[in-house]
Length: 603
Image (tube, rainbow, N blue to C red; front, side, top):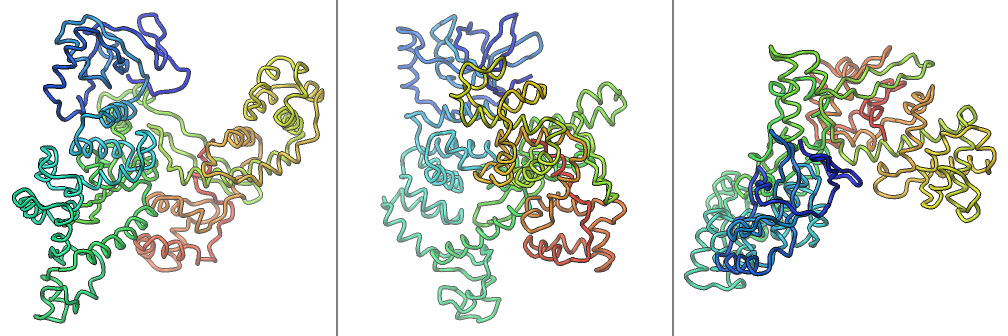
């Protein structure tokens, strides 16, 4: 059992509550290595000897970072940072070491270990390349988040990760300081054979970075590697076969002598390729930061049809791994799970549910009830299909959550405005808004929870407190700002991360608890390029296949009006063309329909 890091959360071990980031002293034998081992690839023997002498003389002056993990026979502490200090302490015979305890899950633990190694001053560039790439991979290819976590610039991170495309010999030469980082950057852009050939020249002839750049600019790249449109290459003077043929055969076996042009066209093609992939898939990761071997194949045989369809289809951990190597540039491996813990949990749940040893209790222990589907308005006679139970928490892409939050905000505000009297909502908002706007006016005049919460003036907390009060209690304060607050809630779309807006979350929660709220949420959703583009290709296919009685599904409608097999062809289109084709079907009746992911995403 591991514990994900949360503010104010602790674990009880041997009767003692251990809080996150607690400082304590542990016996050397209480520590164990993390299951994936030390990410440090090499250690300088001289520096390690100096470390041992320092520890022997003065002890350890920097805490190791550990995490408690429940294992057979009790709790153990896995070392996340400070492997060198731990090993040195054992060598010199220390009985105890100072530690900081972190309550983190596997992914957070790996981030801590990678960051610890990446910021050490004694690491050479070859090690940094591995550490930086692994860290970005652990953030599922999100360079911005990885850079923020590490405390370095995103451009620096990208520069180093690009070097993962280097041949092994290049990285070895870099580690041994036979070449400079600039040499490796130039070589990383070439085919493997050319990297090896030019590496030998750099070492033997002592080529400078500038000289290597001039040589690399004249390197001939096989045109068969090109993924861009090669129409211009047929008659290009830099095509080695242009004198032999002015037809396509001159491209098939030709060599491009203008590497800068080849690189520019490849980059343009790759950016368009990524944009298309990102429109159809939740997560797209380069193989240089997340190798296919570090992921799990999403397979219905292993996870079950229902889980793959209802959970994996739109999950942020369902990734496409894209090759960045020159020869296989842009090749994709789809349907790869990047969350090992979630994958293992789903796999075990399906095994228990289908194996001979399955029992009702075992099945229930691995399931978390999904929110019930919200019924359509009675006036439209429509009901969305009930939501299925799910085995693990689905990681919904932030783009989708933010769009759902945007229109749910409108639905919640409209519902509350129409029903505020029955639930005292006018007074709830009046009190919460007044305290938030004029905290000084109520100093010493409020009682109980309101008096304590007015210090921070947290609107979500104020609303929560007020919603528990009677009308008589609420009427003791101002009750004239409800309409203004609802207007603000409807029009406030500022900020990139709408879903994390605490005010919206509280309002949405309250609105969803009322009778008849379904109609507001369904009416707020409308088919558009924006509303449909937030879903992955697999999830969109599921959405379009959902029927809302008495109407047919869009899939059935499209097959009926365009012929058998038309829907399959529709889903095979490029994302923009697909959305245009869907929205051009103006005869389809969307009344009473809203996608299940939108209705079940609950702030």
